Length: 238
Ligand code: SF4
Image (cartoon, rainbow, N blue to C red; front, side, top):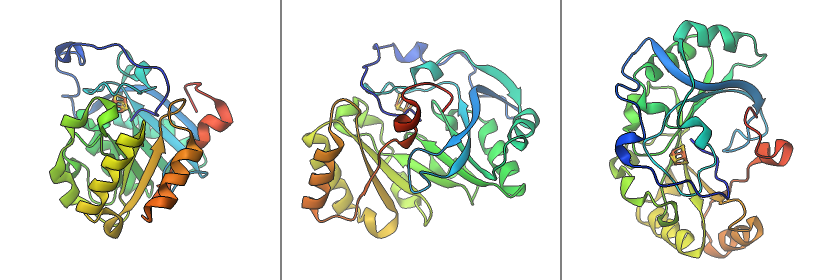
């Protein structure tokens, strides 16, 4: 998943967003980067975490700041990824993108990581079926607010598949997005089921404004800031 930023992406026709046959090989994955960092978001923020960023996304959120993961990357086997991760002093890993669930090898990789004793987080746009992932993976699912430009892509039946340990994240550009989120959270009783993260679009919605709206709302929302950006800015690889 992209980390929200301030630069809008260029509109790109849907048919050219992914190369033909993207993600169809269950033994190999297209990877943009693998690195070891401090987890910047979710309830796991602040903890050391290995990150595997998969290449390719079928959405184009206007505030996405991981456009560099849309194209390119390297094709590597599941075993090669595991070997890379074994070099890091952590048993916590996040699978992200792009959209990781577009690749058939992702559930295979997730299962292997679980068997090796990793805590496995997976960030997904919410457009793919959550149940593609094996049980045991902590799923951090976006719900796309109107300001993303991808509101129509939300897969609402995913809300019935949420379980303890999962998290739902809203990236919010303005008050319209916030009010939409409040309505969704109340309608689906989301805070009774999972942690709900509210994140401001960087450079567009001041974090303090969002904090004040959260307090006014009376909802048990978690303000989600991007710790990795405080530490390293927008540099890829962190
Ligand atoms: S779903 Fe795709 S376009 Fe949207 S933020 Fe994530 S990576 Fe970027």
